[in-house]
Length: 254
Image (cartoon, rainbow, N blue to C red; front, side, top):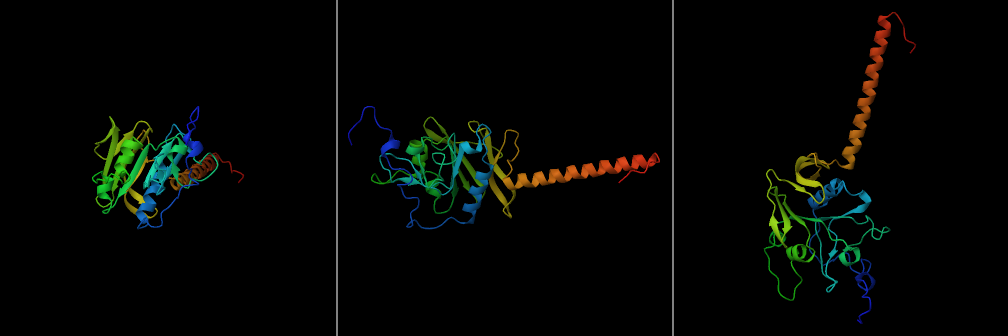
């Protein structure tokens, strides 16, 4: 390809999400129920206060293309969050995949839900042949330089958070396992509760006051409860007023 002056942007000549495959039918296995529910809870509670909802994007089991030299290479995180980007691709379309050279913004945080078959890869304990694509750990740490990489083992509720420091990931220690991410002004921790009818430990975002961020359903329930309480308080005030009038010998016109 001839060099132009000024150089063309990669967005102008590299493949877009419309050109790249969004799934590989030859990949073994499908997400189990936990891999469906846990990312949904993360997405529902991922509300960075410095960004509007239309300026954040979360992906789950979505192809993440990362290398302009090898446009077919991708990872498929269980969940990732991006801030400072339109919820819709080019503000008009649902994403088929996330193509970093087209988007111009890399994820801020990635979550992998550890499975027995992926444990070594998720924790950066695998090596690759020189003619093979980089490992998941290498992509997140050295290529995309994602600030926070999170691994959660649902079998023993072990939560590991790695923070990018000096070009490499370092374990982020916290006891109890509640981690604060200053760039997002959000925290992530283990919440013991019921989601979608299932009671267990879940990964969930919390705010600066340490409060778990409610899901849309929880917010709706809270609004209904607030309205019920308001109606009950009005009823009690009316009953007290009626009692006061009657004590004065006045029969209220009901």
